[in-house]
Each structure stands twice: as C-alpha cells, then as structure tokens.
Image (tube, rainbow, N blue to C red):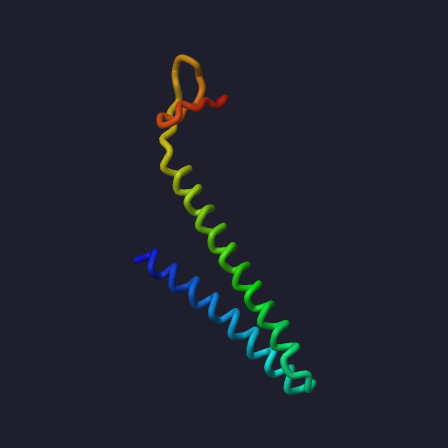
Length: 95
C-alpha cells in the first residue's frame, strides 16, 4: 500500500506543479497583455519544479532505504579482537 501511495503522491505533485505554472502564466499574460510569452516561461518553470520534486522524492526514498539497511544490519562485538563487526559484510570497526 505504501508504494501506491508514494506513486500517487508523486503524480499529484507533478501535475500540480505544471498546472500552477500554466495558470500563473495565463494570469500574468492577461494582466500584461503579452499573450503567450509568460505562459511559456511559467510552463517551463512548472516542468522544472516537477523535475525537482521527482528528484526530491527519489532522494528521500534512497535515504529511507539506507536508514532501514543500517538499522537491520546486525552488529556484534568480537571478544577476541575487541572490535565491532557486522555479520552480513564482515566489516570491522574500532571499539
């Protein structure tokens, strides 16, 4: 259920960024009377904002995944070497 929610959230964010850009561009074109110029500019800004939103969501997802992997990695102390080791990778760290 979490994946469907995340996908829906990303889709709504993309659509809203683009729609807001188009609406602001149309509104400013009406005010200043320079018909398609600001619509094009703000449409492009809306698309760029949507891309930034996608990148932000992917960064958040990657950070959550790394945190989950870190939490799930079992660590134990080796009594012979007095070092902490992870069982899955065999990495060693000082006490």
